Length: 480
Image (cartoon, rainbow, N blue to C red; front, side, top):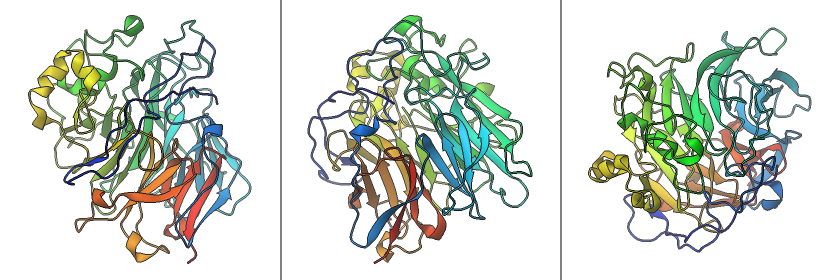
């Protein structure tokens, strides 16, 4: 997959909420939201999350005593992995296929489900989220998938067949996204697809959808990006406003839809985290926005994010930690303090990025942002804002996040939060504070030279990752 990217804007310092002083210094290099000259029609889509493989340094470096090994190879489009309790490994690929291996030592793949006709594999679009039912190995063998639809919302795919022929070098093909599930049959393959949600209007091929995760409450949590332009201010004014948003309420401002209730503008799901019933896709009756006279927002428990591509629950809690892929300046580590306490948090995008106002959107004098600037306490700041630049003191795309729960690693890693960047080839870790949340003041490099698009805890408690560079599932183990 080809892609172009240019130098980003001025790198800033690494900022951490509650931490005094500068943790790292910035330089002007790559910015995750910036792009080069626009390719013409039929050119490969520009990307943020899935870079051309030649850009990624292939030599992995790890702390002493750690090893990086390939356990499953031959999945060049692999975008997400899940481990079943009985040892089976499921890999979803960006093109829309789900594969099963009997174990991490397995060499034969079973094609469980082929949704490639339904899936729009273009740029950062594709099948990016997958989850196994909590009772997957004990009588409820459902697999849940989250993918960009190869069609606008309400139309039947395939419409584009993974290409975009609209004749305009900047106006990408309009698409929706879909959450669905299927049940495994006796032979291990997937049965009929049950569509749970179809939404997420996306005009541009980045910050599409992302993670599916079951919470400790048994609910299914779903993340989706704003689907807006990645190289200019976008409030719905671009190319005829195909998502049909009201004036100055479209584009990236779809992430603030919860603040603009209107009978003519149903609240969308862009830039938000949803909490849904895994059997139906409907909002759960105890969701905080149920009964507020706007039934279209009932699934939302947090919003105001550009691209919450990967998120994870802190083990043993209902706190959610989110790697929110940023625009020109920052990558954010966001935290939802509780998924079930009735609070709906707004992380501020696009009016805010990092710890303060986003300058380009602030200069646009948008009414939604102006009202939000007048009440800054309504915005939840990130735990950490990592500036764009080069090298592992910076980040360009938060593409993986996972808590290490214990196993064969040295004791100091117990409870640590690991985060990864597919563009810079970096992985970091943070020690936990007494309350278990990551101590951003302990943020440090763990590994370089890898290309993770998903992190997971797997057999033995080790960290595994899908590597976009070589199309393989890797294991990071400690041999001492």
